[in-house]
Image (tube, rainbow, N blue to C red; front, top):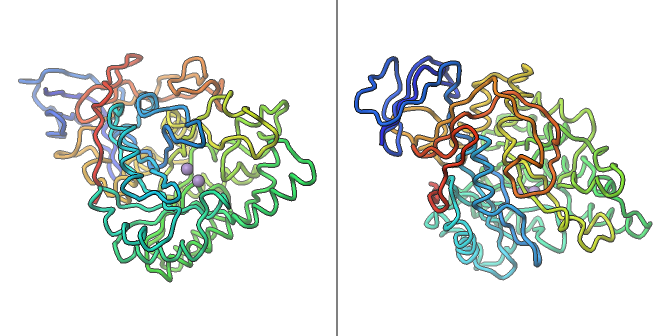
Amino acid sequence: MKTLITNGAIINADETLAGDVLIDGEKIAAVGAAIPKSGVDRVIDAAGKLIMPGGIDVHTHLEMPVGDIASSDDFFTGHRAAAFGGTTTHLDFANQAHGQTLRDTINAWHSRANPKAVIDYGYHITVVDGNDAVLAEIAELKSMGVNTVKMLMAYKGRVMVDDETLFKVMQKCAEQDLLVMTHCENGDAIYTLQNQALAAGHTEPIWHALTRPALLEAEATNRAIKLAEVAGCRLYVVHVTNAGSLEAIALSRAKGNTKLNAETCIQYFFFTKDDLKRPNFEGAKWICSPPFREASDPPALWAGVAKGDLDIVSTDHCPWLMEHRLRGLRNFMDIPNGVPSIEHRMTLLWHFGVGEGRITPQRFVQLTAANPAKLFGIPQKGRIAPGLDADVLVWDPNAENVISAKTHKMRVDYDCWEGTVTRGKPAQVLRRGELLVDGDAWLGVAGSGQYLRRA
Ligand code: MN
Ligand code: MN
């Protein structure tokens, strides 16, 4: 199957050029001016449109089990929603349960993902135990196609690691040249503030934000950076939400730390802790960790992505149905955390980033596809170039989209951006040469997405 995309403006991380893109099977075969149509099976006219690499979302939680429920998008519905929004690859977190081997953890994720996948996918392993058996197993991760290890410095008593485990795993990852990812919040201090709030009778969603202040994220971010420097490992700080954390990252990089990278997630550009104050537990929809911050933080994050202190915009997509969000509700601690956003990352970043003049189209490609490919070991993706996977977006910069839970593809019964109008969305989405989305039509097939073994 040969597809020719003609007359578009091709946008890569470092160049913009007019030309055609020839796709042969799963790969991009040629990029250039006036490629002949002979022998081509399908022609897509991209006049007036842009041709960009498919998005890579490096932070998602699909069908993530918590107790007897799971996040509501599985590896089919989540992939379909991602593809409609222009994302053709994602990396999910395979979360170790206490006592579980890393291999069993990854196999549990495979069993959910393999039959349903439509876009291509890989995993980070989330380590919760720091015993010798787990440390030894870290040396085998590359043979399982996993080159990233995540740890949480929060959620005390559940999945938090202490500094001893954090540091030992960092040392092991330095030895194995694995990238360490950290959720940076001071879990001990948060635990104390939560217990004090509950004892004082505070139940409302806003207390989720009030018991997780930004300074505790900044402190943990700084701590992770320093521990990683001592351990000698590469570090990627996930979901940076505020100016203080960004300062810690920018300072370390300014001093020459070249082993430090960081992301923010699309929702942190839009909301503040005031959204948690909406009445009748409506604020529960805006509960995620770290929480939304002050009105001064989103502009700081925009400056961070424009300047380069933040390398990637991901989602931390973790959807929960309202019946699960409000089930057995006694207080803010009972509400599952997470914002549904896998579908909206690219369209929101395009409209409010490129459309409103905060970032260039090339920076958009860097943040959504090229940097994820580079930092996470996916060299076959993230660029429109011969020999690479044909993950291609034909992007219509003028197409309007009205966000609504009634029309979005995510399997969740509300939308934090309900009513928001954006301009710019994919007209066609190809994953390894296969047309997944054509206008409003869905053509993807469950099971066609491939597991990415990353090196
Ligand atoms: Mn997190
Ligand atoms: Mn997460």
